[in-house]
Length: 118
Length: 114
Image (cartoon, rainbow over all chains, first blue to last red; front, side, top):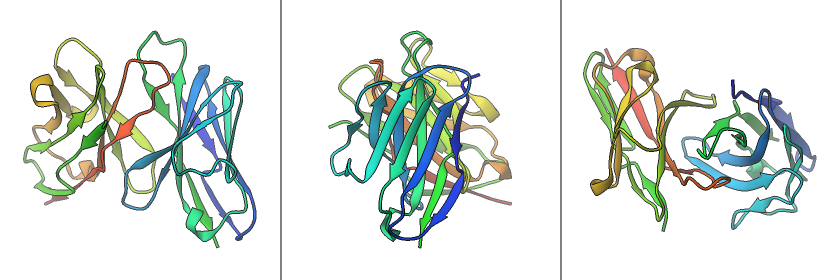
């Protein structure tokens, strides 16, 4: 159990276009989902926290108008990179918290999406 | 400030030798601690976690970690390393509070020599 999927796994786009990344919890309801960004050979940096049905909370320095997050249901969150530029190229990873699993704040990670902006 | 420190950026261990990866944390609340492993281009795989109870926790792939509150540490160990263990290892901390994000260390790259 506790499987999180991401789609697409890899995307290449032209500069100026928008890209949508989906994060789905396949066998549980995710009350909270997190979006992380990872540059090559670096750690994961939290971008935003999203709770189902409410606006995402963005970390300092993350442009909310550029990285649009929608958590419309308990199993789906989307990250849209608007007007992507080469500096947005990165590995994007989502995680989800199972709201049914007691009080332990364990998160389950998706496999990641490699975004390359040309 | 809340943070996780992994002092070793890169470690090389001979196959069959023992391994210890260090992790120190600074956290204002009761910490929940995790170790993850990441192979190149892949997502994160959970090795083990500590929430409470026995301070020595066992994980997958023969890994274990010991929580030492007095030292604010959660070091990862393995008695005999295999070549397939070569990867990036991340220590992370969060709180019991639902919806709190993970704070990750910068990671330690493990290389295994034959």
